[in-house]
Length: 398
Image 1 (tube, rainbow, N blue to C red):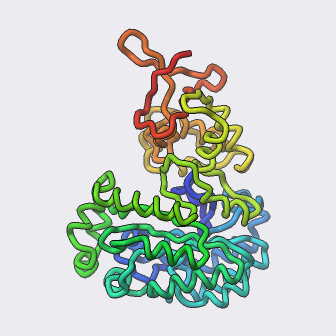
Image 2: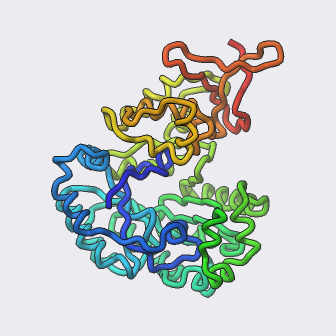
Image 3: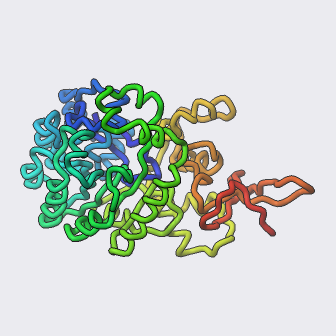
């Protein structure tokens, strides 16, 4: 079914996702397969929704009517053996309805047919290994690495835009990222999305013995860490620096640097959600380090790109919302500006603004204590724009 892309709010500019069946690529570290291995698309329900979405007032229908695209798919590969036969007729319907699509894939079957259906789109092509024998042990049903590099060239030759996903980038799997990044750049990719491998304890428990053996206990231990292991962090930094030197646009969630990575998304689709990266770029262009920013500054940047009216959107707050409901009144329906206010005010939320290493709450010292400065208009704290700040609070002079 088409659903809001709740977990990627302010991270990914595509606000809707369409997930299909359990993915037969069977990548051993796949969070979606580990969380729910028996997923199955309800195709009749999807088609009923698409046939009637213009007469509905649900959030997915509202977003589609406003021209926002759908990603296929955050949780499965649309071109895996288990999905491509359903992907193609769905793409036909989406194309007839004028609904744009963004793809996340490792490649597979049906792509040549898909290229005859969809117009210029953004494709995220995942590449996580250099040695294909090692890849087969962890991603047994997925296409080879050479096939994925060929796919990038094929897509760009057809006028599509590609970002490569070194997600995850693991030193044992890609020991020397530079030759791979050279190939990605030569194939015509716009940028590269780089992340560490992260798995929680339950996901690891859900792995088969074969999957755990293929990944290895040392790597699983590193994946469980709350923060990136030092050796992995240095490896990622090296890859990011080299990719930037090649002219690739680089993105990692939470990065505190300027990046045009998402420009290709915004230019390709008629409507997209704003991201924290867009806001960070704006701050670099507009403010000086140490400048104080109000919530209204943030809201005026974000809300023109978000739907109007009230919606049931508390799911964007994630599991943290259960704790917040015990302390604050979170309405069943709210505007996106209200949602942004909660993200501005609450550093405990995964996508809270203070989580970024570019912002800290502005505070003044009162004797030995810091008191956060509150804007009387919105009754929300001021923040300081300060790249690479690691504290949640920053003492300022007013």
